[in-house]
Length: 324
Image (cartoon, rainbow, N blue to C red; front, side):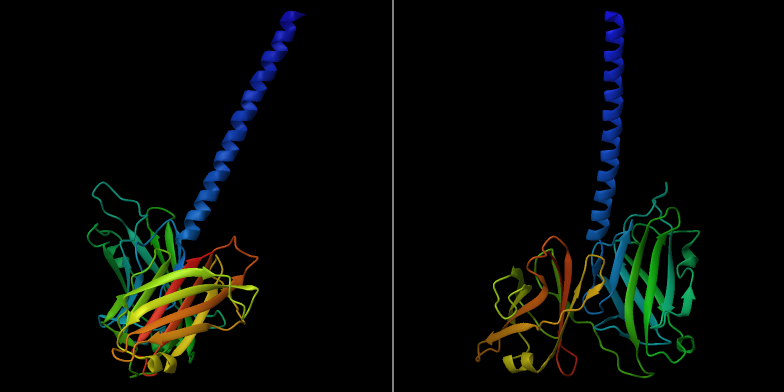
């Protein structure tokens, strides 16, 4: 009887160990899925100037994604037809690397109408490198050049450019989406070779053109009573040179708010601002308060984008902030 009881106890302990091992594996699997989803969420973002969105699904890029035309950076999402556009990714990673330290990448281009109709597509813009691949040096600044034919646009004035950079040796990819308007033939494009970044925190990216600024400070403000239920992204840009208080006030301002999946959220509350400066040197301090969420909702990641441009569109400030 005692031996039977010991056998039952041993069997019970074994079952518990098996169950514990199984539960640990399930927990580990769920944790991996959670970490993967968080990692992907952190690698999704919006690029200043063009409003281009990127979604990392195994392939990541180290810095902003530049859109250039004739070597100059595009300052808006208004793009030309029948003219080469150069999309540059800085140090993309996540590709399978072979024994010769070569990676094999493809890039699929799709243009959609505002109604979602397919206007134009190319299965692989990088097809000429399909067999020889890319070296590590070539990936430092990977340029993807393409032309959108005017005839393919079918009299549409707007569209969505979708580009998928993918690994030919795995399922890893980076998806890019850019809502665009099409420029008229011969229209002067909004481009510049004098684009700089404003020094700020890792959670924010700020680009400035035709101006200079010393630094930018980002905080969350829940003390404003104009809209007491809202939390605000506070953007404080200091020592702006190249304009004046009246110059800032005469410019055009816009802001956008996006959820964790980069879907736009409509905000009805207004942008608040304070502009200060010294008359003798025209240095300007520009403080913005951008409403982006209810105070009671603070466990989600939001992306806030702000853009200011001068009346002649030669001076631009474009800021993208990720916060909770």
